[in-house]
Length: 354
Image 1: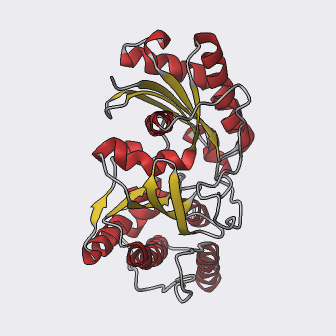
Image 2 (image 1 turned 120 degrees about the vertical axis):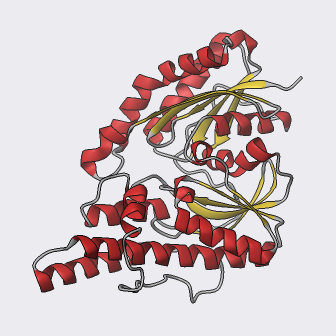
């Protein structure tokens, strides 16, 4: 019989709990976002996030169990994000999971947050190994060759800002509301991507590493030049800047993805993370996959962004592989999936790069 797991996620600014069966059935998935709490600060404030997690975690777990129609006694295990992420939030989730495991006697499985994203295509579509995963979000961006539930090879990633972080910063520079991804995409729809040609960082360098910090700086300089020349920024200026910025991100990610597919010959290209919702980016990646003869797969948006269903599923996969954790399970701000790869540079305001 397929095991049933409770998943707990609190690595950044979403408090989440879910109940998932080992046959891929999501019995419940509860996510409490914190967008309103951080709106005035232009990004996630770690202490505010940690306090919100501490206040909401038990309520989310209770709601997830209620929606699933199960009690703790009906579960086979508890999976929790043990890193990487903002340490206050990760610690809140780990401590709750330990308490539930100790009180119920259920097995405890610590999950790498990135593994949750990377294994989501197996939850949603039953994809077999191997496949190429592009994780592109507010806190992370990397190419992973997924050979097994605990076998990941990182081909490259961002050495500074993640794409979602760059979108947030550009939105802030242009006076657009947060979160920046949807705001920039909406503004870009009415813009001319050819008016401002922004740099394509690291495009001339071999390999699959990425950089978005310089692109953000180029946007800042263009904004300041326009403001100086005409005494302010017009609405069409904002739209054109957004369109040019978005086009640059899409082109860089598409080319690096092409290289990753060429290097691995992977039969499937999967993408996860909130930035995967961007239609310009998604269209570019679909075209790359089609040209390479690979299947393109993007899980539903609710499972692309941070959620606990992916953590429960990753916990089930690890549990089947024999993983069990004790009360010494540690919360980790950094936790690379590929321990053999060199550490990524940069930290970023949305969390540590792994």
